[in-house]
Amino acid sequence: MNEQAQVTDETPPPYDLIGDVHGCIDELRELLAVLGYVEDAHSGVWHPDGRTLIFLGDLADRGPGGLQVWRLVLAGLEHGVARFVPGNHDSKLARYFQGRDVRISHGFEQSVRELAALPVGERTLLADLICRTILDAPPYLLLDRDRLVAAHAGVEEWMIGGNSRQISIFARFGEKTGEHNALGLPLRRDWAGTYQGRPLIVYGHTPTPEPVFRNNTVNIDQGCAFGGRLTALRYPELATVSVPARRVYAHPSMAEQMALLTNAALAADD
Ligand SMILES: [Mn+2]
Image (tube, rainbow, N blue to C red):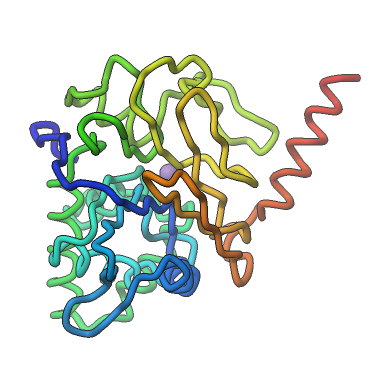
């Protein structure tokens, strides 16, 4: 999360934006194939029509292949066919690589396992590369001549075009209200509900069963690691393409989450 980095990216469309992968490597490969991407050993992943992949962060944790997802994204970044904005799980991974104290929870235990399984030399190289990528990345991206914003948790209208520590934290975490929902998860201020800006904001971070288009914002996190789906938004087409999770990698599953939230809403209506 580089708070000095340029947030404007000159890469022209078309793009494919992909929500929180969370280690779902099989679903990511399937989604990329459906979108027409080709993977080869030399150039990594690429699209015959010159499309650019934009990853919305939270690449690892929960699903079984976080480091494989990272390798695919790193190859895409190296060959100029992918962009990346960091999520809260990515910044935690960077802090871990810097030797700082982080809680091994919320799926992070899976990434620790994957790292431990690597030979030490390979682990060091990969850790350095991942850490540098996360720390150098701008907190969000402003694309297509200021018509599109890609951010993990979102941005407020006044933040667009700027960069600072406050903006970087909001883009990765959103803003907590101090309250919790029926799942015990912190409630976040509904910035999208009042958004009136011109650029379309594409984000993830909070899983919803379907992509949510609202006030010129789109949430494309469909909770793949929780047994939901992995979604891409094609831009400028604004079509969503999803593949189902092969299984539930983390609980509460999307079905359990929806049932708990529905029950809480019904109880509140009584
Ligand atoms: Mn997140």
